Length: 172
Image (cartoon, rainbow, N blue to C red; front, side, top):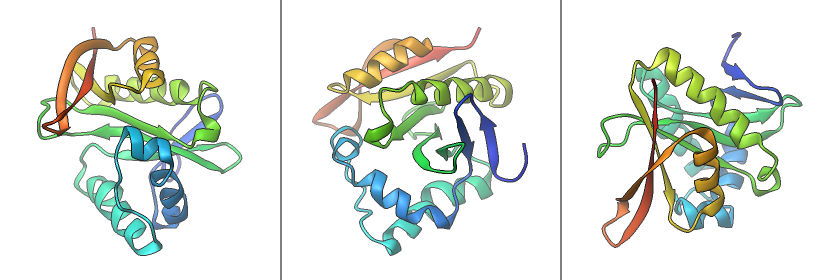
């Protein structure tokens, strides 16, 4: 794939983030659904967005670690983030994603995650891939099951007082 493009699906392209994505990151991370289901990352201005992009995207890229990417329509409009995260409490990476509310329910997350699972299968040399979602995020749980993930119970990933659902995708 040319340049920063990681993969292409039917309607989307997935590419590495750049500092030019700051405005999009502010919009996505301050969406009520993002705050409710993922958490408040305290990214609410250009400076904190740049710091977030450097820490969460660019540093992992430079170090060759699991990282998230920007998902955009082939028209060039950024609509979400999706990628791999290596959590300190999991041995294998987990698949994470978040989309602007205007683009949920259209199959775009499924399409994107399907491409990323194929990349994980071909390039990550792992036997399984995890995903974590809020107990109340029924749409995300439905999506993970549709992708072939199996529910593995609860995990206290963000707070000792609040459990999240852990899902696992097994590569055969």
